[in-house]
Length: 77
Image 1 (cartoon, rainbow, N blue to C red):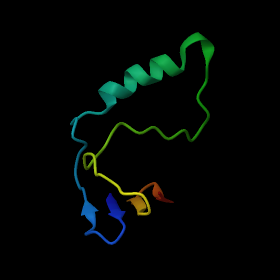
Image 2 (tube, rainbow, N blue to C red):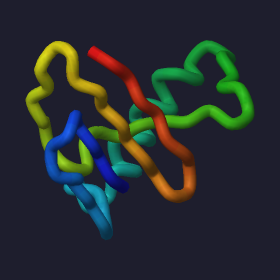
Image 3 (cartoon, rainbow, N blue to C red):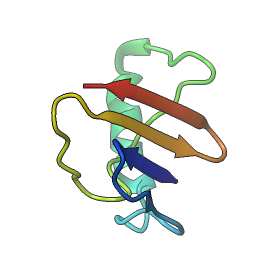
Image 4 (spheres, helix red, strand yellow):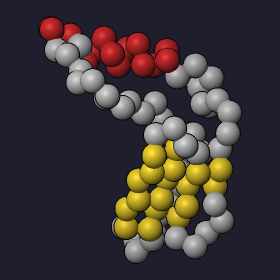
């Protein structure tokens, strides 16, 4: 995945999640969100935390995050 903030150097991450096994947290999340008969819609995307740590952003900067298998999102602050 990559993170681009403004005109700063591109931040790249490859390999596994910092938790090593983010599915551990996912199980708790899934149990909580399907309690009492609730159903998650097909195609639900779940995030399990940061792959690159917290990156400070300044007002006016554009943030773009890209995952090869999922796609990309960008926002202007």
